[in-house]
Image 1 (cartoon, rainbow, N blue to C red):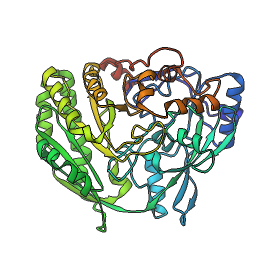
Image 2: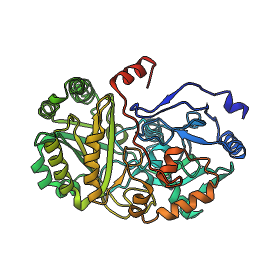
Image 3: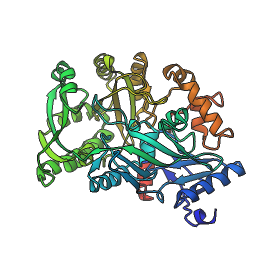
Length: 464
């Protein structure tokens, strides 16, 4: 383990939002798959625990550990490209933005992405990360093969033809089956997209919802609480040339959507009763913009304002009812929330722990500005999601336990069987996963609330 230990890093680790911190015994960053397999095998033989971290964009304690935290920084980049078959293999630590740029150089692209591109490819698929578009599944549906390092230190190749059951379990696995060292993706020819956004009344959006979903490759909207307005976003393929030099569009995406919104969020934190007024001001500030660029550059949006988030998947047919209930509970309880409610739509799939398993889905996400109390708001909205057979996004906050999750996922028991076979000693588990999987009889706790003072301290310490 000498080579990996030479890259050891110390100190505390925290996730992007500041909701999770830990003090790992050691932090390792293997520089090759062979070194990774050696490190994992030695940990398994010694009875140690190991969790893998990508960019830290999950809001739950998925990687929290007091033993070894394994970073994937040294395993990045494309290792093979099969243009004829439309397949690309990338090492597991490759950030999505870097992957998108590298794919464009080869004339190809991922068919869909989420609205954040700083995650690693392994982290994104392992938590069920998704974009929007009723003809597209989540990112894990693009996976054609996986290279998995098991607790025994063995390097196993998985695909629909090779170990198909393990493959289905590993596509969305929460890092509980082993370390995904490389991912083979199905890619499509590089494409340019036209992105259009405008303000629209929520009643109009709901009246035209099925039309917007059907007629646009990618459609989503952000409804602002305490208002009847939403920001609607439409993205479609085009032959037009990129317009990335459009200064107004870039100013709106970067300055208005981050700098001005940060100011509004700080106002809400300092004076929570003003949150409704802030929502109204934000809604009136929605600009109509158009941009054309290559797909991976338009899917993602800069996120400089930090927040906590809960997101649930519900059957698409229940979307309008659930959103109406969310509006009603916000108005009734007057939560101090200034963030919009994010609404996206995804095609169903056959991945065991995918929230979109066997159903076309709507995703609804609620957010709270970092440093503000989020628990009462999230709890009230989560109760609504539960009435509609809700399944949580694995990287977002929720309070479900194994007993409930087993009823929401038809292949839950099969996943647990595969997990027990691949990692019988639980090397890839932490306390959170043990509680989530029902392996200790306890419940998964909500991450601790981080105060404004805690946030200021972390910033002073150089938190990311």
